[in-house]
Length: 268
Image (cartoon, rainbow, N blue to C red; front, side, top):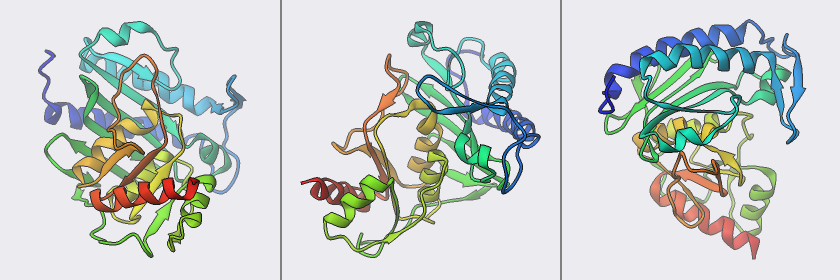
């Protein structure tokens, strides 16, 4: 496949691979109870399960032949500098929301993005236990299970449905904002996609989210009419030497700017 790949051609092939990856994950998933998978911990303290590693290995083997010239970045694969010289790459999270997955929470997802020149051009997120698949191609809109999705049409942040980590939610309350605080989902990608689908009016994420956590959800949110930026209004750039990001805010453009302003005011 040449560098001028067609996302519309690639998307159904990647979707079929994601669905198979979902079946692998479900072999280990136990709703409401501990997963049937060995759990270990990385040096940073975050968990990794046998399922994460199996899905990661499967995805790399299955996706690489679709675009041999692409680089690769995954949460569960050792990183290397060679990806930095690639025009395009796959960015993968084999299981986003591992803690929830290990505890039997169905809100986990498998994420694949194609990033070219620092921005995603194709994003797919498959939540097998919820039977939800989100797909977006740059300039073509976003879908969930084949149906178009769009962000909330809400015009004011007061009373909005928001999800945020505890510290950031506290900042919002200190700003004087009255809002409907929704449970924070264990998968950051799914949190952003609840904004993309309009179930949430906005969401915040702590600093240190990584490329694999957000790249696929970023383009889906964007194509659904929303925005994802840091608190300075900067859009994430992917495939940098350091794949971590500052604190982030997601929502419809007007609400997202108001959300950032409230979070910053609450810190003063």
